Image 1 (cartoon, rainbow, N blue to C red):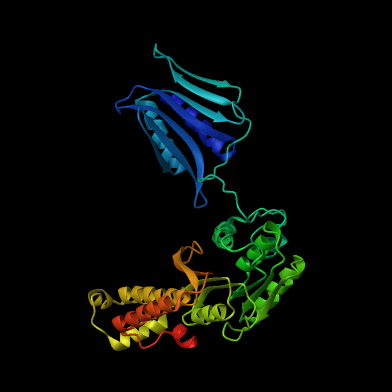
Image 2 (image 1 turned 180 degrees about the vertical axis):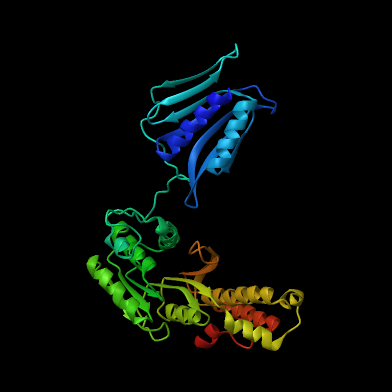
Length: 393
């Protein structure tokens, strides 16, 4: 039996190397593990590493576990020695069947292939993406894909990030009246990955003629992005050198600022509110201004037992800073949302603060919001919030 098992495992290894592997099935279980009926093995790719996913099929449930190739091969070998009487290796070239008959005889036979092609090894089902990699010259220029539109292996995370970002924005844009987004400002656009993708989505998917401006302080990034925009024939996409504070955003409908450090996020929200933008989207970072206020004043309150620790103080400062930002947006008639945004597999989770323009709130409600802002500042010993000061509240 062991000789035939070795031949079976060797054939399995060869099919994996030659990329003809489809799947393996182990059946007719006679071992000691209660209620186990079958093992189904398929190839998956998890974090760019080939693995084998093993489905343990019991009478009333299925259990799936992922193993390295070597672990899975050892597992199959042990199960074939201790309980499973039949195993079938499916490849695109042939089916290989290992079977121990009732009389104890062992046979290993080949048959015609049941599958003409190997299935996708993607761990997750392929998602319908708003930004497709094919025929997108800007993705090739930015080194996300090759010239044929195939996503580079080392750019898979970035490509997923781009689509995740567009999925979020698409759901927010759908809340606005049709045709609202005429001018977009992306503050701190960097190398422009997300700016290009948003332009692509607005023009190619939504069929809008929106003007999109990327604002970036680094001149080399501005020049690079404008070159890519020209090569991509993105006529209404332009990148300008400057700071968020200096940018004139008077007629912007959608204002975006991802990872604007500390009070630069407040500068961006201020610009959006003053422009009466229909949608404001920020992912703040480095909440230093409020942290300094809390540290300097050291007010005793119900969370002092937490904020005496630096890491908890940092998190508290983040929540208080963004919580007050959300209240200020509400004061100016924005429906606010705060939720988690994972912008990149290699960066921490961020909070996304969103303001969607609604109807102006009543004077009574404005007074209530101001009272909440004041009470929050007093509770944490905050002398001022930068956005509050900008707006002269």
